[in-house]
Length: 484
Image 1 (cartoon, one colour):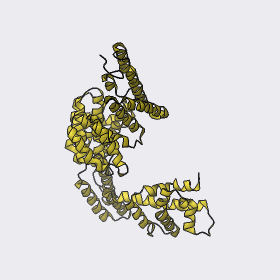
Image 2 (tube, rainbow, N blue to C red; image 1 turned 90 degrees about the vertical axis):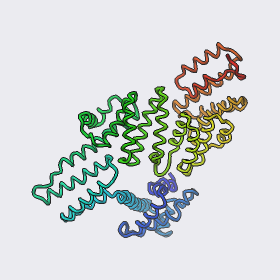
Image 3 (cartoon, one colour; image 1 turned 45 degrees about the vertical axis):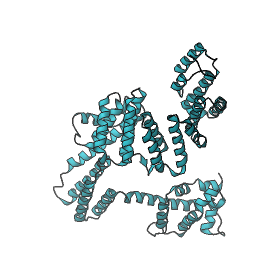
Image 4 (cartoon, rainbow, N blue to C red; image 1 turned 120 degrees about the vertical axis):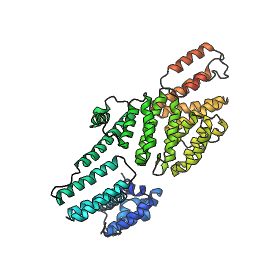
């Protein structure tokens, strides 16, 4: 590895260029503060990153070399020492870690209260400790959230109260039941959440045996424990909706609890619950229960209105596309077009235009406005292999349905060559390979050869991995069509 590459691939530089500008400014203040750092060479290394780092990466020049950083910090006369610059980089990285940890800590008021209480307790300031514990408890109770984190924070605060009582009062403080209840709720939710995750990932019949306390949690709930705890009820409904997706009452209960208890959850929790509920819908759709398309659409629309699908302020390209597809499938065409335009602003800025163009083309394709789709598809930058497959699939169908046979045959040949070059596509590659193969056979069918067409239809129906199966079965065979 070159010196340049060594600098570029260092954890320090990768972290620095990934940081938002606001964090970079705050880290610069921390490095220049004697509270965090008292070494001048660390400040100089930061200067190097600020003045030359990101610019050098874009130009790929030697300013990023460790030697360049070393000369900047220690001067041109100093003999280069790899170990010395590595040690300096590690020191700066340690300050960045401290800042990032501190930033997370200062954004969590519960942790601030709790650590202050612990500090006062260690100093023996029991009266002050008691007042701060009460403040911490009041602050927690005022919050609207009642998720697993709330109960864990309650457990930590009540444990501190118990410790205060043990030290300050002869008889102590009798809050053991509250401590145990808060911890039990936290464990119950944590177990149910893990159970839901495993059920969503694959169909496991022994999930409860794999997750400690899940079997006990399910037993306690069945016996009537946690009856008034909204967070337990919601995660429990999610668990059973995933475990028995064919039993509609579980899904109905989950929908009701999501609506009733949404305010108790953080956005992260709510996003997980919505995605799990949509996962149930997908299973039912795959089992030919078409009414769950509407259920999935309703969940997506509700989640979008609550902002739960946004991560760091952005909507992922996968979610953006999934919402479009389900909206079109239930006939919400006007809503779908408005959605594409409205939520374009929430796509990652770097790929915003390309993602929007790809999905708008998909929309026009789905509603069979092929001319509109073809004004967009050739300009979609297909960085992702599966997206490349999908764009080619749409263009193949458009060319066929519009009778552009010369363009179609050329595209099928290039598509086939692309599939040969990309063998890492797994079963997706096989699906599209079969799609190309069967369409070529359809085109080559002798005109009005009904027996050959029936034989090919049977082969299409029986092939396991095949994209556009229904469409292939519906098209008219032969270059000129017209099969009976």
